[in-house]
Amino acid sequence: MQNVDLSVFTKVTFIGHNFLNCCLALQNVDLSVFTKVTTICDAFLSGCSGLQNVDLHAFTNVTYVGSEFLKFVPGLQNIEAPLLPKEHALMVALPLTNTSSTP
Image (tube, rainbow, N blue to C red; front, side, top):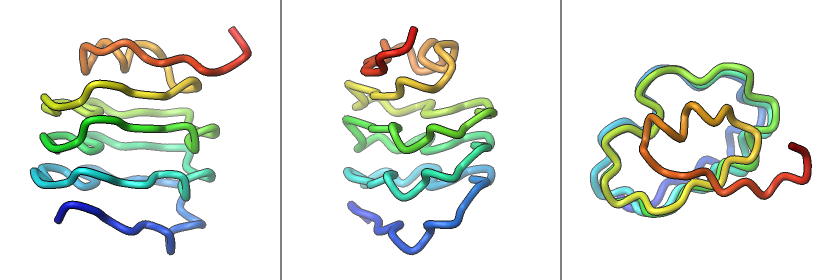
């Protein structure tokens, strides 16, 4: 699976453990539908070695992010996540691209 269509999940508020975990061939995933998500559990997109860029701007309501968030994603070059806690950038050893106007 190289692409996944999540457009039907407009009412999701909770992303469970191992969401798309180890989808090795996954190259593109549009997460813009997840505007209501408040919780992201462990191993979110972990092991998706084909991913290069992730835009998490939709996650404006997230209050909790579990462990192994984007872990083992060696091809990942950029994460755009202005509203997620910076400690999650350390977990994946990449800088966050902060495009938010608030400090």
